[in-house]
Length: 254
Image 1 (cartoon, rainbow, N blue to C red):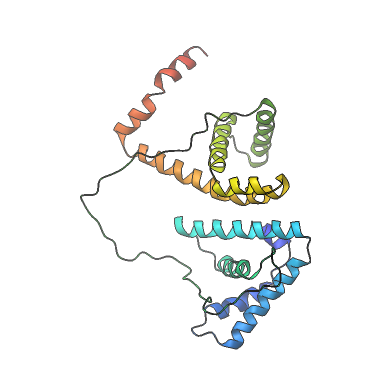
Image 2 (tube, rainbow, N blue to C red; image 1 turned 30 degrees about the horizontal axis):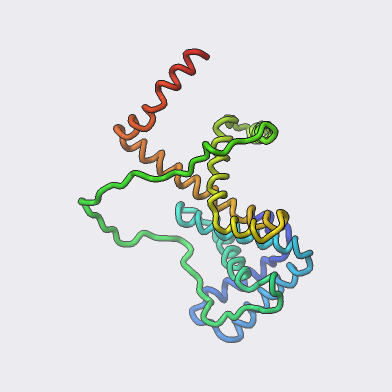
């Protein structure tokens, strides 16, 4: 995503560096606010040199970058100082630009704030009487199917990915995972509203903008559920024991 953003050539590394010096300053003066506004305005003007649809695509990629980067910081110890500076700049740039109503600008008063780069653990509180609530409702995709043409096309894509990356992803497993992601997207209120009020071409901007959130949601739900089963022998046997008879008969007759 960073490479895609760089390809639009709207971010100047020198501006990013100078902007972060302002953001991390103990006290921001009026002159520094003007400089920061100048940096953001410069990137905004470079963006406006593109056609409207290209502007929307660029903004969509930057939003995805911000969301995914914030997710990375929450779930991992990922650390990259230069990338964090770029994240800070892009986050403020997204607040500054408004491609639907150009020229409105953005008021920076009271909004200049930089968060700590590395999350550190503080106090820890433990209670021994917590009751586990392991039951969850996972997205189900069984009632959705793929047409023969779409399944064939997806199989070709998976084969190409395996060839290019040296992986060995199983086609059936990937298809079921993608059906789960599609089910999550189908439940999106934002996409429902977009579909009702836009053409398919305009709808696709919202669709591709929401894909990262759906992938993260599917990943977190699967990881949480699998971790639960791995740590609980009784629950693991109850859940997966349901399939033992079916798998035995299927493999026996294969």
